[in-house]
Length: 365
Image (cartoon, rainbow, N blue to C red; front, top):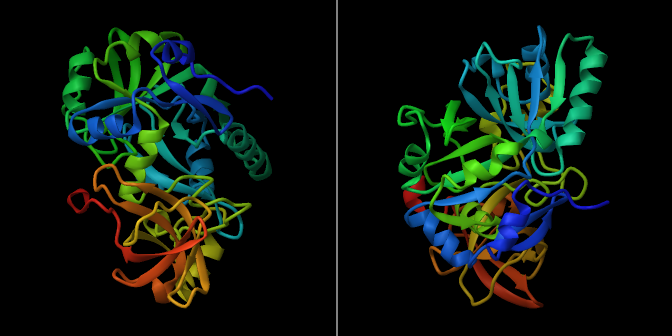
Protein backbone atom coordinates (compact mmCIF):
# COMPACT_ATOMS: atom_id res chain seq x y z
CA UNK A 1 0.00 0.00 0.00
CA UNK A 2 1.46 3.42 -0.95
CA UNK A 3 2.32 5.81 1.86
CA UNK A 4 -0.11 8.63 2.57
CA UNK A 5 1.39 12.06 2.02
CA UNK A 6 0.78 15.35 3.83
CA UNK A 7 -0.34 18.21 1.56
CA UNK A 8 3.07 19.92 1.74
CA UNK A 9 5.17 16.83 1.09
CA UNK A 10 6.72 18.33 -2.06
CA UNK A 11 7.33 21.68 -0.34
CA UNK A 12 9.18 19.92 2.47
CA UNK A 13 11.25 18.00 -0.07
CA UNK A 14 12.23 21.26 -1.79
CA UNK A 15 13.24 22.66 1.61
CA UNK A 16 15.67 19.75 1.98
CA UNK A 17 13.79 17.64 4.49
CA UNK A 18 14.58 13.96 4.93
CA UNK A 19 11.60 11.65 5.32
CA UNK A 20 10.52 8.58 7.25
CA UNK A 21 7.53 6.27 7.23
CA UNK A 22 5.37 6.82 10.29
CA UNK A 23 1.95 5.31 10.80
CA UNK A 24 1.57 4.75 7.07
CA UNK A 25 2.53 8.35 6.22
CA UNK A 26 5.60 9.76 4.46
CA UNK A 27 6.63 12.46 6.93
CA UNK A 28 9.61 14.81 7.35
CA UNK A 29 11.92 13.53 10.08
CA UNK A 30 14.27 16.52 9.98
CA UNK A 31 14.81 19.70 7.96
CA UNK A 32 18.23 20.85 9.20
CA UNK A 33 19.23 18.74 12.19
CA UNK A 34 17.32 17.22 15.10
CA UNK A 35 19.51 19.07 17.60
CA UNK A 36 18.98 22.44 15.91
CA UNK A 37 15.23 21.94 15.62
CA UNK A 38 14.99 20.69 19.21
CA UNK A 39 16.93 23.71 20.47
CA UNK A 40 14.68 26.11 18.55
CA UNK A 41 11.61 24.74 20.32
CA UNK A 42 13.20 24.79 23.78
CA UNK A 43 14.64 28.29 23.34
CA UNK A 44 12.35 30.14 20.90
CA UNK A 45 9.83 28.57 18.49
CA UNK A 46 9.49 25.91 15.81
CA UNK A 47 6.70 24.70 13.56
CA UNK A 48 5.91 21.02 12.91
CA UNK A 49 3.83 19.49 10.15
CA UNK A 50 1.80 16.86 12.03
CA UNK A 51 -0.73 16.19 9.28
CA UNK A 52 -0.31 12.46 9.89
CA UNK A 53 -2.54 12.82 12.96
CA UNK A 54 -6.16 11.80 12.44
CA UNK A 55 -9.24 13.99 12.70
CA UNK A 56 -12.66 12.46 13.37
CA UNK A 57 -15.84 14.49 13.76
CA UNK A 58 -18.79 13.24 15.80
CA UNK A 59 -22.21 14.88 15.84
CA UNK A 60 -25.90 14.22 16.38
CA UNK A 61 -28.28 13.86 19.36
CA UNK A 62 -26.27 11.02 20.93
CA UNK A 63 -22.77 12.31 20.13
CA UNK A 64 -21.98 13.05 23.78
CA UNK A 65 -23.09 9.62 24.92
CA UNK A 66 -21.04 7.89 22.22
CA UNK A 67 -17.89 9.87 23.08
CA UNK A 68 -18.44 9.26 26.79
CA UNK A 69 -18.69 5.50 26.35
CA UNK A 70 -15.67 5.19 24.04
CA UNK A 71 -13.16 7.39 25.89
CA UNK A 72 -12.01 7.15 29.51
CA UNK A 73 -12.27 10.81 30.50
CA UNK A 74 -15.48 12.72 31.23
CA UNK A 75 -16.60 14.53 28.08
CA UNK A 76 -19.65 15.95 29.87
CA UNK A 77 -17.26 18.36 31.58
CA UNK A 78 -16.30 19.96 28.26
CA UNK A 79 -17.81 23.31 27.34
CA UNK A 80 -17.59 24.48 23.70
CA UNK A 81 -13.94 25.30 23.07
CA UNK A 82 -12.63 22.96 25.79
CA UNK A 83 -10.48 19.88 25.21
CA UNK A 84 -9.16 16.95 27.24
CA UNK A 85 -6.56 14.22 26.99
CA UNK A 86 -8.10 10.75 27.09
CA UNK A 87 -7.51 7.05 26.50
CA UNK A 88 -9.39 4.67 24.20
CA UNK A 89 -9.47 1.24 25.86
CA UNK A 90 -10.80 -2.22 25.10
CA UNK A 91 -12.93 -4.44 27.38
CA UNK A 92 -9.81 -5.49 29.33
CA UNK A 93 -8.82 -1.88 29.99
CA UNK A 94 -5.88 -2.10 27.58
CA UNK A 95 -5.00 1.17 25.84
CA UNK A 96 -5.81 0.99 22.12
CA UNK A 97 -4.82 4.62 21.53
CA UNK A 98 -4.59 7.97 23.28
CA UNK A 99 -6.34 11.03 21.97
CA UNK A 100 -7.32 14.65 22.51
CA UNK A 101 -11.06 15.34 22.43
CA UNK A 102 -12.32 18.83 21.49
CA UNK A 103 -15.83 20.15 22.16
CA UNK A 104 -16.73 22.19 19.10
CA UNK A 105 -18.79 25.41 19.09
CA UNK A 106 -22.55 25.00 19.29
CA UNK A 107 -23.06 26.31 15.75
CA UNK A 108 -20.60 23.82 14.24
CA UNK A 109 -21.85 20.98 12.05
CA UNK A 110 -20.32 18.44 14.47
CA UNK A 111 -20.25 18.39 18.27
CA UNK A 112 -16.82 16.84 18.84
CA UNK A 113 -13.49 16.53 17.12
CA UNK A 114 -11.06 13.92 18.36
CA UNK A 115 -7.51 13.27 17.20
CA UNK A 116 -6.26 9.67 17.09
CA UNK A 117 -2.65 8.89 16.30
CA UNK A 118 -1.13 8.34 12.88
CA UNK A 119 -2.62 5.41 11.02
CA UNK A 120 -5.45 4.91 13.53
CA UNK A 121 -8.09 7.10 11.90
CA UNK A 122 -9.76 4.34 9.89
CA UNK A 123 -9.61 1.95 12.85
CA UNK A 124 -11.29 4.50 15.12
CA UNK A 125 -13.84 5.45 12.48
CA UNK A 126 -14.84 1.78 12.22
CA UNK A 127 -14.86 1.38 16.01
CA UNK A 128 -17.10 4.40 16.56
CA UNK A 129 -19.53 3.25 13.86
CA UNK A 130 -19.62 -0.31 15.19
CA UNK A 131 -20.45 0.72 18.73
CA UNK A 132 -22.91 3.37 17.57
CA UNK A 133 -24.82 0.68 15.70
CA UNK A 134 -24.53 -1.85 18.53
CA UNK A 135 -25.86 0.65 21.07
CA UNK A 136 -28.46 2.02 18.62
CA UNK A 137 -27.33 5.61 19.10
CA UNK A 138 -28.19 8.55 16.84
CA UNK A 139 -24.78 9.94 15.90
CA UNK A 140 -22.82 10.76 12.78
CA UNK A 141 -19.11 9.90 12.57
CA UNK A 142 -16.94 11.36 9.82
CA UNK A 143 -13.29 10.60 9.15
CA UNK A 144 -12.01 14.05 8.18
CA UNK A 145 -8.30 13.18 8.16
CA UNK A 146 -7.93 13.79 4.43
CA UNK A 147 -9.72 17.14 4.70
CA UNK A 148 -7.20 18.77 7.02
CA UNK A 149 -3.54 19.49 7.55
CA UNK A 150 -2.35 19.92 11.12
CA UNK A 151 0.53 22.05 12.36
CA UNK A 152 2.08 22.47 15.81
CA UNK A 153 3.74 25.79 16.68
CA UNK A 154 5.72 25.17 19.85
CA UNK A 155 8.17 27.00 22.10
CA UNK A 156 8.46 29.93 24.52
CA UNK A 157 7.81 32.32 21.63
CA UNK A 158 4.94 30.30 20.13
CA UNK A 159 2.23 32.68 21.35
CA UNK A 160 3.95 35.62 19.64
CA UNK A 161 4.43 33.61 16.44
CA UNK A 162 0.76 32.63 16.27
CA UNK A 163 -0.36 36.15 17.20
CA UNK A 164 1.74 37.57 14.35
CA UNK A 165 0.22 35.12 11.87
CA UNK A 166 -3.37 35.34 13.08
CA UNK A 167 -5.94 37.92 12.05
CA UNK A 168 -7.59 37.62 15.47
CA UNK A 169 -6.18 37.63 19.00
CA UNK A 170 -5.08 34.32 20.52
CA UNK A 171 -3.69 35.70 23.79
CA UNK A 172 -6.79 34.69 25.76
CA UNK A 173 -6.79 31.05 24.58
CA UNK A 174 -5.79 29.11 27.69
CA UNK A 175 -4.17 25.70 27.98
CA UNK A 176 -6.48 23.00 26.53
CA UNK A 177 -8.83 25.60 25.08
CA UNK A 178 -9.48 26.16 21.38
CA UNK A 179 -11.51 28.20 18.92
CA UNK A 180 -11.70 29.13 15.26
CA UNK A 181 -9.17 31.79 14.32
CA UNK A 182 -8.33 33.27 10.93
CA UNK A 183 -4.65 32.74 10.05
CA UNK A 184 -3.60 34.59 6.90
CA UNK A 185 -7.28 34.76 6.06
CA UNK A 186 -7.82 31.00 6.51
CA UNK A 187 -10.31 29.78 9.14
CA UNK A 188 -8.40 27.34 11.36
CA UNK A 189 -9.21 25.46 14.55
CA UNK A 190 -6.52 26.76 16.92
CA UNK A 191 -5.89 24.94 20.21
CA UNK A 192 -3.41 25.68 22.98
CA UNK A 193 -2.13 22.12 23.09
CA UNK A 194 1.10 20.34 22.20
CA UNK A 195 3.47 17.44 22.66
CA UNK A 196 6.76 19.14 23.52
CA UNK A 197 6.45 20.41 27.10
CA UNK A 198 6.61 24.00 25.87
CA UNK A 199 3.86 26.53 25.39
CA UNK A 200 2.30 26.18 21.99
CA UNK A 201 -0.62 25.81 19.66
CA UNK A 202 -1.90 23.15 17.31
CA UNK A 203 -3.78 24.26 14.21
CA UNK A 204 -6.23 22.18 12.19
CA UNK A 205 -6.09 23.68 8.70
CA UNK A 206 -8.20 23.04 5.58
CA UNK A 207 -6.16 20.77 3.30
CA UNK A 208 -6.39 23.11 0.30
CA UNK A 209 -5.11 26.07 2.37
CA UNK A 210 -2.21 24.18 3.91
CA UNK A 211 0.48 26.15 2.07
CA UNK A 212 -0.98 29.55 2.93
CA UNK A 213 -1.02 28.82 6.65
CA UNK A 214 2.41 27.14 6.69
CA UNK A 215 3.93 30.19 5.02
CA UNK A 216 2.49 32.42 7.73
CA UNK A 217 5.10 31.13 10.19
CA UNK A 218 8.61 32.49 9.71
CA UNK A 219 10.38 30.17 12.11
CA UNK A 220 12.38 26.93 12.21
CA UNK A 221 10.57 24.03 10.51
CA UNK A 222 10.85 20.88 12.61
CA UNK A 223 10.47 17.19 11.82
CA UNK A 224 9.36 14.13 13.72
CA UNK A 225 12.90 13.52 14.99
CA UNK A 226 12.86 16.64 17.18
CA UNK A 227 9.25 15.96 18.14
CA UNK A 228 10.40 12.60 19.50
CA UNK A 229 13.35 13.94 21.51
CA UNK A 230 11.21 16.74 22.92
CA UNK A 231 8.41 14.44 24.07
CA UNK A 232 10.89 11.88 25.47
CA UNK A 233 12.44 14.57 27.68
CA UNK A 234 8.92 15.12 29.03
CA UNK A 235 8.15 11.43 29.50
CA UNK A 236 5.13 11.63 27.17
CA UNK A 237 3.73 8.39 25.78
CA UNK A 238 4.09 7.49 22.10
CA UNK A 239 1.33 5.27 20.75
CA UNK A 240 2.65 2.05 19.25
CA UNK A 241 5.93 2.39 21.11
CA UNK A 242 5.31 3.15 24.80
CA UNK A 243 2.13 1.11 24.58
CA UNK A 244 0.85 -1.26 21.90
CA UNK A 245 -2.30 -3.35 22.31
CA UNK A 246 -0.75 -6.20 20.33
CA UNK A 247 2.94 -6.19 21.22
CA UNK A 248 3.03 -4.43 24.60
CA UNK A 249 -0.49 -4.17 26.06
CA UNK A 250 -0.71 -1.65 28.88
CA UNK A 251 -3.50 -0.12 30.89
CA UNK A 252 -3.67 3.57 31.91
CA UNK A 253 -2.53 2.90 35.48
CA UNK A 254 0.59 1.04 34.32
CA UNK A 255 1.27 3.85 31.84
CA UNK A 256 0.87 6.49 34.58
CA UNK A 257 -2.04 8.21 32.88
CA UNK A 258 -4.64 7.15 35.42
CA UNK A 259 -5.68 10.80 35.70
CA UNK A 260 -7.50 10.35 32.38
CA UNK A 261 -9.71 7.59 33.82
CA UNK A 262 -13.02 8.71 35.33
CA UNK A 263 -14.49 5.61 36.94
CA UNK A 264 -17.76 7.39 37.72
CA UNK A 265 -18.52 7.37 33.98
CA UNK A 266 -19.54 4.40 31.84
CA UNK A 267 -17.02 3.46 29.14
CA UNK A 268 -15.62 0.36 27.46
CA UNK A 269 -13.04 -1.11 29.85
CA UNK A 270 -14.33 0.68 32.94
CA UNK A 271 -15.01 -2.43 35.05
CA UNK A 272 -11.59 -3.90 34.28
CA UNK A 273 -9.87 -0.63 35.19
CA UNK A 274 -11.79 -0.36 38.44
CA UNK A 275 -10.33 -3.74 39.41
CA UNK A 276 -6.84 -2.61 38.39
CA UNK A 277 -7.12 0.50 40.52
CA UNK A 278 -8.28 -1.53 43.53
CA UNK A 279 -5.62 -4.24 43.17
CA UNK A 280 -2.73 -2.06 41.99
CA UNK A 281 -0.27 -2.75 39.19
CA UNK A 282 2.77 -5.01 39.13
CA UNK A 283 4.70 -2.92 36.57
CA UNK A 284 4.81 0.80 35.98
CA UNK A 285 6.13 3.33 33.46
CA UNK A 286 9.39 5.00 34.49
CA UNK A 287 12.11 7.26 33.25
CA UNK A 288 15.78 6.49 33.66
CA UNK A 289 19.11 8.13 32.93
CA UNK A 290 22.20 6.18 31.90
CA UNK A 291 25.20 6.65 34.14
CA UNK A 292 27.55 4.77 31.82
CA UNK A 293 28.25 5.83 28.27
CA UNK A 294 25.75 4.63 25.67
CA UNK A 295 22.30 5.44 24.24
CA UNK A 296 19.24 3.36 25.15
CA UNK A 297 16.96 2.44 22.27
CA UNK A 298 13.52 0.92 21.87
CA UNK A 299 13.60 -2.82 22.52
CA UNK A 300 16.74 -2.93 24.66
CA UNK A 301 16.52 -5.09 27.80
CA UNK A 302 16.37 -3.54 31.25
CA UNK A 303 17.92 -5.69 33.99
CA UNK A 304 18.52 -5.51 37.70
CA UNK A 305 22.03 -5.42 39.11
CA UNK A 306 22.14 -9.23 38.97
CA UNK A 307 21.56 -9.14 35.19
CA UNK A 308 18.04 -10.55 35.46
CA UNK A 309 15.78 -9.05 32.81
CA UNK A 310 13.05 -6.96 34.47
CA UNK A 311 11.77 -4.87 31.56
CA UNK A 312 12.27 -3.38 28.14
CA UNK A 313 13.16 0.09 26.93
CA UNK A 314 10.18 1.58 25.10
CA UNK A 315 11.81 4.91 24.17
CA UNK A 316 15.34 6.22 24.45
CA UNK A 317 17.54 8.99 23.12
CA UNK A 318 20.51 11.24 23.79
CA UNK A 319 18.76 14.24 25.33
CA UNK A 320 19.70 17.35 23.32
CA UNK A 321 18.84 19.60 26.27
CA UNK A 322 20.67 17.63 28.97
CA UNK A 323 23.44 16.16 26.84
CA UNK A 324 22.83 12.84 28.59
CA UNK A 325 21.25 9.52 27.56
CA UNK A 326 17.68 9.05 28.84
CA UNK A 327 15.00 6.44 28.37
CA UNK A 328 11.50 5.26 29.22
CA UNK A 329 10.14 1.81 29.92
CA UNK A 330 8.20 -0.45 32.26
CA UNK A 331 9.71 -2.11 35.35
CA UNK A 332 8.26 -3.95 38.36
CA UNK A 333 7.02 -1.49 40.99
CA UNK A 334 9.78 -2.64 43.36
CA UNK A 335 12.30 -1.01 41.02
CA UNK A 336 10.31 2.17 40.26
CA UNK A 337 11.54 4.53 42.97
CA UNK A 338 13.74 7.41 41.77
CA UNK A 339 17.40 6.68 42.45
CA UNK A 340 17.02 2.90 42.07
CA UNK A 341 20.00 1.46 40.19
CA UNK A 342 19.16 -0.66 37.15
CA UNK A 343 21.12 -1.73 34.09
CA UNK A 344 20.35 -1.48 30.39
CA UNK A 345 21.77 -3.77 27.73
CA UNK A 346 23.16 -1.47 25.04
CA UNK A 347 24.47 -3.37 22.01
CA UNK A 348 25.22 -6.39 24.16
CA UNK A 349 26.91 -4.45 26.94
CA UNK A 350 25.41 -3.88 30.38
CA UNK A 351 25.22 -0.17 31.24
CA UNK A 352 24.47 1.33 34.65
CA UNK A 353 21.39 3.54 34.88
CA UNK A 354 19.21 5.12 37.56
CA UNK A 355 15.45 5.50 37.73
CA UNK A 356 14.41 9.15 37.48
CA UNK A 357 11.07 10.92 37.76
CA UNK A 358 9.71 12.55 34.63
CA UNK A 359 9.78 15.04 33.11
CA UNK A 360 13.54 14.89 32.96
CA UNK A 361 13.52 18.70 32.63
CA UNK A 362 12.53 19.64 36.17
CA UNK A 363 11.57 23.21 35.25
CA UNK A 364 8.78 21.77 33.05
CA UNK A 365 6.91 20.08 35.92
